[in-house]
Length: 365
Image (cartoon, rainbow, N blue to C red; front, side, top):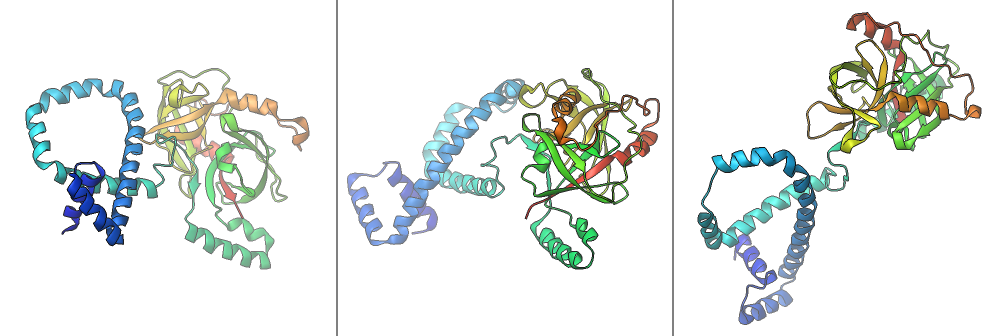
């Protein structure tokens, strides 16, 4: 008996499609042949997974129904198939179709399981925290230990476990990034555009709005010049040109775009939706309007829509800064209220911005 034939027999057995005589003979076979018994148990488990997965997809289908309605009607008109033909096909080839479908679905489920898709509760919405490969991390950790023996200053060369972006909110070393970037970190470093790396500490965070405030506490840090941008307090308008800069790679990357919605994922009013190319590592980067005002902090993207990203609105950043306990601040945190980027070309704006946007490197033991 071939594998496909055995699977057909097992399906008949599980679905109660055997006669009493056939079922009794198959029970004897199960008892005498452990391999067959294992296949039956595995197939039962597998069909249970398919049922659970089907229930999971059903909710998604309902949510997508409104968006797909027009297209569905069009497809029905273009791909009309007589129902009786489908019924006849199913009656004739039911077992073969079931086996083929089982194999195909099993392959898809395996792929989704090992990529973490089935374990991700927010499958359409991902935080933009860049993760370095394990091999590279282990290699650099060894290099870091060697460097520590010779020069403690060189330990910052370790690329870290995660990478994100942050930007200065004051000239004396206070930086904002996303909370999910630094969450559970043992240590956090920031690296400037010229490659200098500084140790920081997390002085305050607001997990509900995904905001974290860092303070550079590295003795090699000598301060920044006057911040060239300010922070917009009012809402920005849909259709405005915007841009972001950050570190999805080891170099700073510009992401031009425009504001597409006044709320974020699932109607989240703490966020904007923007059309701009972002990737893992962009998280925590500034979102600016055409005049160079900070209007948000990039923190996530939509996986099923090309170029759809989300940013926490700047007024929530301002509120977070106000909520920082005074005893957490080593120095006064004074925000800039003068924007020198307005009226400049995009190239000139980037040149003035680049020294205030940092790569954030996160370390875990």
